[in-house]
Amino acid sequence: MPTPPAGNNLAGKLYATLVLRLVLDQRGRLMHGELVDVAGGLSNRFVAWRGLIRTLRAWLTCQEQEGASDDLE
Image (cartoon, rainbow, N blue to C red):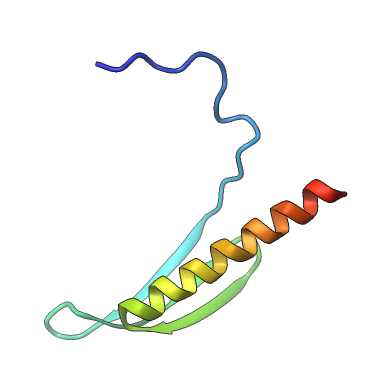
């Protein structure tokens, strides 16, 4: 069993809550959906898995850019 790390490794981390709304077909396959950033109130729609991945990647990139600009202030 691994040894837990010493200290508070969670300090200084950013936590985000996203709501993922999905529309599935009768067989349970993803058709389209919406990614909602609860804190920012932003909503991004997508189609199929590729759209979900692109939307999530774009949201994460935006978070990285905002974090980098916060570091400059």
